[in-house]
Length: 109
Image (tube, rainbow, N blue to C red; front, top):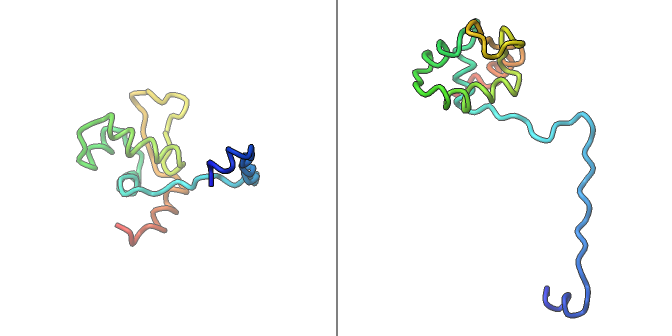
């Protein structure tokens, strides 16, 4: 009991965390339904507006946060001009890794 250990001067010492193995990521990105839809429409290079329109979404901020950023961070889509992320000519296209994700999740729509 906790009060007994405090009364007798005993303290529990937490065990150290397990060592991380190099090269193994902690968290595997999940393919959310939203990102899966984005991958479906991102076949050829398209602007953010074109992708958003293809998904019938109106709020640009929400689109970036829920759809675009997770797919970019996971490496499933890429910018055509990565050195200029705010360029008016910026387009997004699916990567080979994104194509693999599409194939693996084909039946999960």
